[in-house]
Amino acid sequence: MIDRSRVTQRARRWLRREDGSATIEFAILFPVFIMIFLSSVELGMITLRHAMLERGMDMAVRNIRLGTGTAPQHDEIKAEICEFAGVIPGCATTLRLEMVPVNLRTAVSVPTDVDCVDTSEEVQPVRAFVNGQENELMILRACVKFDPIFPTTGLGRQLRTDSAGQAALVVSSAFVQEPD
Image (tube, rainbow, N blue to C red; front, side, top):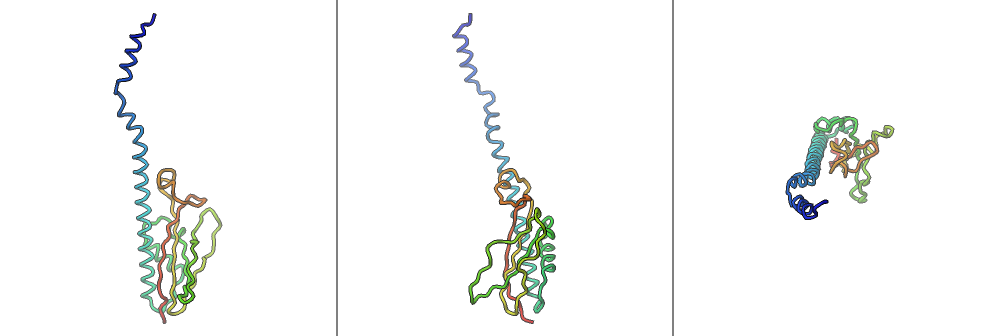
């Protein structure tokens, strides 16, 4: 016959044991810390790529401003931005430029929809790349696509991606087309 007091005594002793309590805490908190770490790495790479794209755009626009009287061409500007940006993988194939004149007198704004490369679709022609007249304000906008480092966890999962799984970085700059 089973002695009930003995069974309840063993059960109480077993419930009071603290063996494995650190394991439970580890099992609960480890995934959270890993997700925070992976998100930090992802955010760091996004920030680095965005800063370098901004730098590339600024340096290219600076060269346009200093080249008085020359009409910059799409491929030249794209090559300069990619050269100055440096750390953007596949920049030459995923960078898309848009340059539009802005008339300050009519207060027409630049379209809010950004034109980016979608590698899952057919190749698209250059959109709205117009060399301006003398003394005309020009808006130059660049969109580059990149693959998230950790697309299934943390921040990488929250990024807005296209059908190819790539996220976009967009920068813009303005300059005045200098006279000849």
